[in-house]
Image 1 (spheres, helix red, strand yellow):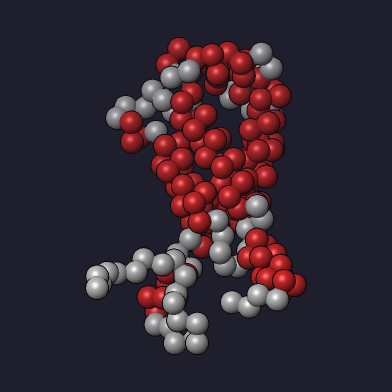
Image 2 (cartoon, helix red, strand yellow):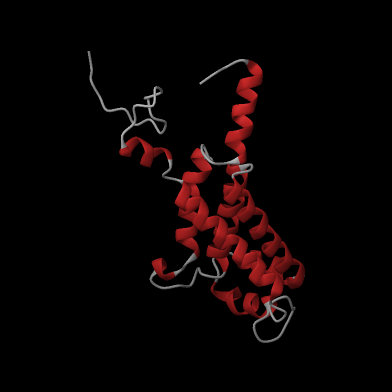
Length: 176
């Protein structure tokens, strides 16, 4: 017989006999959800309320920013695509950040929201912060990595997803 350590994310103690480590394990993703949710909501609102950002050209505009990073990005074709209509691209990023932030914060379609956040972070890393040297100075790469736990685990607690899952189980007669 082989003995090993269990690495379950949900505590095996269903009778309420939990210690602080079990509780901490269950709620480990909550600070990450709050941070990423608030940050992406703020980033989306910041873009939408900055009149200089939502312009095709001029100081602080999305258009000038994309033109400035075009030659140093990993995928110049992606930047070229955004430059066809920089204002629409700016709105797409801003509304995408809002949707991702709200989804992660309330835990609605969490894995889908995390995928959206990861894709936004990946596209920004490959374009805007690609030239950062050394690579860990670029702020989009840590965000990309931070989305991974939420993409894998979702929001098992304190989320709309968890409430809907619980409701489906009750209706199906499964209690856990």
